[in-house]
Amino acid sequence: MTNETHTHEHGAPAPRMSFFEAAPEVYRAMVALDRAAREGLDPALAELVKIRASQLNHCAYCLAMHTRDARKAGETEERIYLLSAWHEAGAFFTPKEQAALALTEAITVITDGFVPDEVYQRAAEHFEQAELAQLIAVIFTINSWNRIAVTTRMDPASL
Image 1: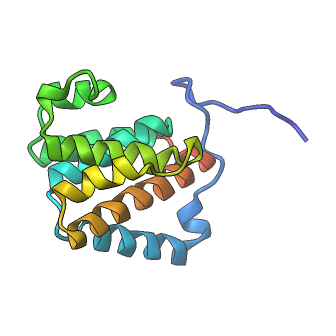
Image 2 (image 1 turned 180 degrees about the horizontal axis):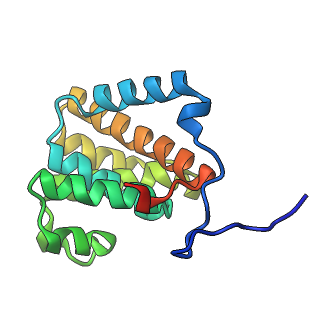
C-alpha cells in the first residue's frame, strides 16, 4: 500500500477515478435527488448552503461549481466572500439565511454533538415545515456530493 499522491501540472491531486462513469446509476440517482431537494427553495439560498457545506468539507470542486451557480442566481461577490465568516458578518445575511447556515453547519459537522435543538428551532421559526424539509434535503445532498468529490479528488479545473 502506498500513500503516494499523483498531481496535475497545476499542483492539484490527480483524480482517483471517474466515479460517475464507474457508477452511472448512482450518478443519475444523485442528480434526481439534487433536483428534488432544491424544489421550492430560493435558488440563491440553496447555493449559499451548498457553498457553506463545501467550505466545511474542504471540497474545492463543489466550491468552484456553487460559487459560479450562486453568481448566476444573483448572489453578490461580497456575500460569497463573507460566507465563511457569516457569524461575524451577520448584517450581510438575513435572519432566515443565518438560520439556514447554522442548520447547514450543524448537519455538516454532525459529529460535534448532533443538531442542537436551538439550531433546529431557529430554522423552524423561519421555514414552513415543507420548506424546512427541502432545506434539510439540500444540506444532506450537498454533503453527499462533497464526499464523492473529495474521495475521488474531482478536479475543479475540469469545470
